[in-house]
Length: 344
Ligand code: UD2
Ligand code: MN
Image (cartoon, rainbow, N blue to C red; front, side, top):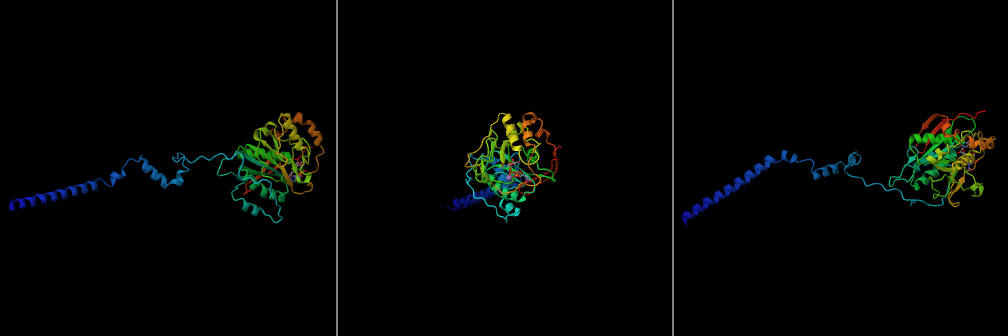
């Protein structure tokens, strides 16, 4: 027993020694391969990349070769869920441009685009203008929220006639079309009097397969269509439709006739004017007297007789003007132009 016990003790000690050696060598091995080895793991490892992406997500989303595919934005619905129908309009004498800017923080340089869906059309609103600041303010106040509820990508252009020669609404609208296309390839153009405020947001500011007249009725005429070929006030034409008729005539200086001329151009192209239902296409015209510098155009009947002969060479393709300034305050693009004067 004595011999065996000392032999057993030696064996046990050897076992411990061996275990200790094993532990030490494992530790030495770990120490040797840690650090550099871990760092040299292949970077193509999906896990590593995923972690890297998670840490810099904000810069990745805009990277060209983005590996995180953003959820595609859906097209806006055919009918906007934001529409309210008949609206209560207000014309507060104390309203200021600052107020309207404050109410429309998401409009920049006259432009807006829904962020939650892709607008069905990109629309340029063209407003011919001179010395009607109060009317412009009321229109901007109502029109911006109205267009946003329709989920449109849009921009508002105000085309100011410089100087005090006779007003020419039609030529200003031609200029607006040509200038707006330098900014963006708009699908649709709305030619909009400054004093007409839409009363119902179901009156959609989008273009149709045919030219569209948006004012069936207004307060001052008992909301009745004035006459069958009436095409004044607010109209919507696609980029192609307006190009096809060579735009408005540039020859109408003073009040009247230019809207009838556009109607003739449309009919000459075998297009047909469409209108929304009378219960929707309603406007309030802010009261005004005839402006000085916009006296009745005595030549309008004579000019209308010539339309079928001259339309091809009097219009967009002959519209000469000088752009004096382009400003971009928050709510509209402000174009000031010299459009010349009537030929005597
Ligand atoms: C009618 C038409 C209008 C046009 C005009 C005859 C309707 C609802 N409107 O408007 O589209 O055909 O007859 O030319 O039928 N403007 C200025 N400053 C001026 C003069 C005119 O900004 O000094 C602009 C402004 O956008 C105004 C528009 O031109 O709304 C039409 O002029 P208007 O309002 O004096 O003519 P009105 O109401 O008879
Ligand atoms: Mn008017």
